[in-house]
Amino acid sequence: MNHRSALTALHCGALMFGFTGVLGKLATTTPSMIVFGRALFAVLALAAFAGLIARIPWQRLRANDWGRLTLGGVLLAGHWVSFFISVKVAGVAIATLGFTSFPALTVILEGLIFRERIRRNEIVLVCLVSIGLVLVTPEFNLASGATTGLLWGVLSGLLFALLSLVNRAGSGKVGPVQSALCQNLVVALCLLPFAAPELASVSAMNWLWIALLGVFCTGVAHSLFVASLDVLKARTAAVVFALEPVYGITFAWLIFSETPTVRMMAGGALIIFAIFLSARMGDGKAVEPVDAQAARP
Image 1 (cartoon, rainbow, N blue to C red):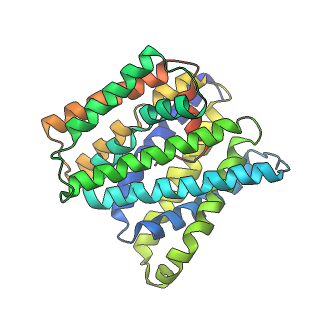
Image 2: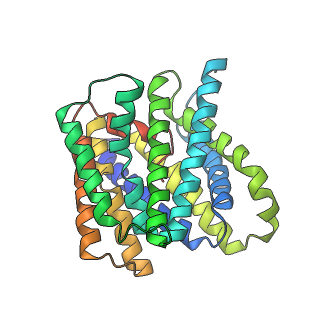
């Protein structure tokens, strides 16, 4: 893979991640069923990539590796369920913008958990995201679907931030594809008790949307990301993935006519600008959460 093909693969991966909310809305079943199916198909896709395409060797895991991967899988399950609840309640655009608060939440949590000094530019990041979320919220009323959906989206971002820190703590100990496969397996097992009663009633069309979500927006997208990092720097990948919410909101606009208001567009622009800044500063930590994933929403 040369530089141009790696960059193309990276943009395709970001495009697929951006389509996640759309497929989640098209699937007219419960968030628990969507997440269970997504994780199941992701495991199959990642296993095929690791075993048949990339020939990635399976690393022997110790007890503490399994503990970290299990915790990561539980957080990933909560992250995805809360994101799809947000999509169902408030739509793709608001859910995506709520989730994209995760860089600011990661900065705060890193400072608290790892006792790292928060830099001035990171404080600016937190402020930009906070102002953006205020602008995105039409009204602060819990009876409003938009407000409730945004809160679910922010919760999704919080769980994703925690997930990124769990993976940071175990960085380098388990390969990214194996880590993603194991965590998706944990997700499927966590959601199986909730999804089992619904399995017989899921329509063929819903299975199609869920399969596309698991294979392309999770397994293939993550595999493209991992493959591109053999050529590209992590910082370059982070800047490209800063476009993910732009893709998601654009798809929602075109497919579901979720036309954003001027205030919402201003808030979204601030949040996306903050993500871009987060991707540009530091040593590329902004992409670490993707290793957890196939983790983007």
